[in-house]
Image (tube, rainbow, N blue to C red; front, top):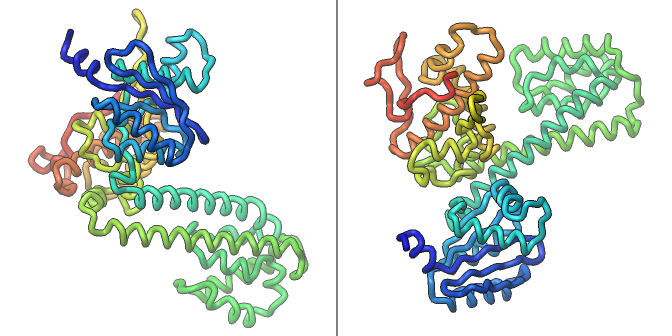
Length: 430
């Protein structure tokens, strides 16, 4: 008997299939050939009953589960607080293993608990980090709420630009410079139609719009331009008291509310994380601002739990995967079997970093596209390589505890000018 088998035999293994109202539990105890099945409801009494049953074995207990929405959070928190070792099972791995074991895509809750138990026995599990126990619940909720609000605001912007403005003031779209410009929505809420502007003389319109437009360079010229544009507008002549404009104003008010919510969340994130050492290290990296840092900390927690940057790349789904069979060998691609929010954050951070004047990201990007700067496929590969470098860099700055230090001066940077964060081999260089 090997050491691994002896260790595995000493443990009580528990597979749990999670659902909204009840959970299927399968227990394999050492020395017993028959497995114990339980069904527990999503109540505190049943949670405590399960904890008592597992504690009675007086052996180390390892529990495996598949994350299902947020229905697993309450149960797994209670089990973790009870001192049990909790492991996460990948949904994709669970589905493939179930098909391989049963030669069928048929599934049910007891069968899933059986497959989860089998994956525990062979060690095909992942580390689970409970957000509440890790102290990142507030960070996660801020990050997720910011994403929800941002998506709602983006959808609303598309509705304004694609539906309402073409109807009532299509020429106004050119005055919109940024999705963070609340003055534009406030102006449209006061003047939702070009015909409401031209119903006033220019002096009255200027006086009414002056405070709404806000602090702008050449404000008088801007307001005059808006008025002259409205005079030649092709917008529909809808009455001021029409329900159509009332609905438009309602949408504009919602947009302004979403902007205020997003700003409030961003301010709260800076206040919450301002003294966080990992936040300070992350924001020292080009392209990593408050929201990107917030997302990384919310999705990863403590980056130090990844002993090597390859483990972190795999967690992000940015590890290389290649299809090979016989003499055939496909192109290496990123697997995308990982955290999609992290990949998107690293991609956006990389695109921002290459716009900075002097850092290792810009240098790598320029060297990558040097042979054909206008090749879109090559530029896409370059951005992918930069995103992978971003992942390695943030892992390095957290592990080393030293902020990112960009190199300075022209030409290829020397090794002595690079910080630990900017060292490391090329990634996705083909």
